[in-house]
Image (tube, rainbow, N blue to C red; front, side):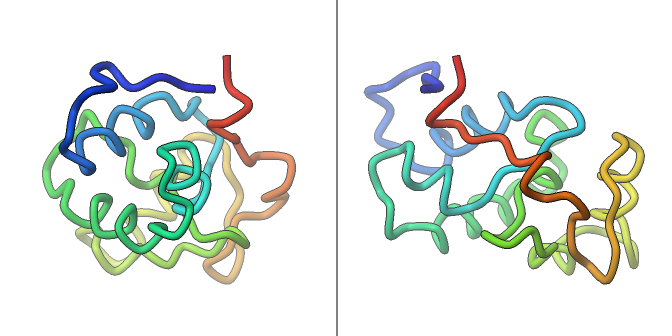
Length: 114
C-alpha cells in the first residue's frame, strides 16, 4: 500500500496528491481507488475535486486519474480541447472515445503498490 508523506496530514487534498504523485508513468488509477486507500471509500467525488483543484500544479499528474471504468471524466478541467488525452497518449496510454484502452492492464492499484 502506498504511503502519504505525512500520514497525520489532515488536508485530504494533499493526501490525494501524495498518492497521485506515485502513479507510475504510463499507468492510470481511479478516483475510487485513491479514496479507498485513504480510508474514505465513499469519497471518490472528493478525490475528483482534489484533481480538479490541481490547476497549474505540474507536480501532480492529475491526467493519470480516471473514473472506475477508465473514462476521462475530468478532461474538461484541463486547458485545451484534449490535453488530458494528449498527456496520457504521450506516456503510451491509448485512448479511444474518451476511454483508456486496455484499462485493466494499465490500472495501478495504490492498495497493492509497494
